[in-house]
Amino acid sequence: MLEKSVGGVYEVSKNTEIYCYIVMIFKLFFGDNIGRISISEYFVYLEYLMKLGVSKELIDKLSYIYMNRSNENPYEYLEELLPYYGRTSKNVFNLVRKKMNL
Image 1 (cartoon, rainbow, N blue to C red):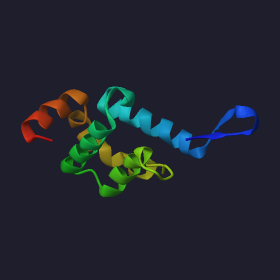
Image 2: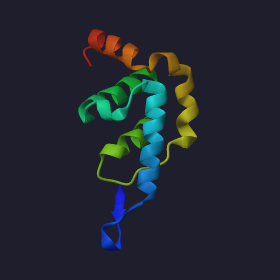
Image 3: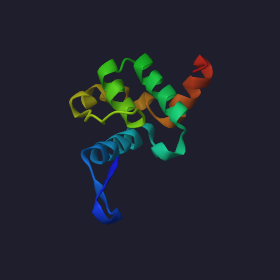
Image 4: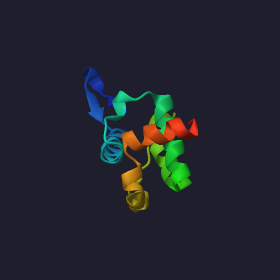
């Protein structure tokens, strides 16, 4: 995500900017920092969002931060998260996860 330049100084790349943007989106909807959950739990959360009805296109873009590929900006799909806002929080996710064995 960071590109190394001459002299060992790291420069922010487009991937870093999009990663930070996705982290902010995650914090808004999940209600916690992305660094507090494991990568596998992050993907379980994305699976949960898909079960709620979030599009595969948005899920794909959110998943790229942990894949060996360039991040893609999810801005064009963000409005579709709004109807699910109350059900995307960490607390609701954990309750549903236990009931659905996710």
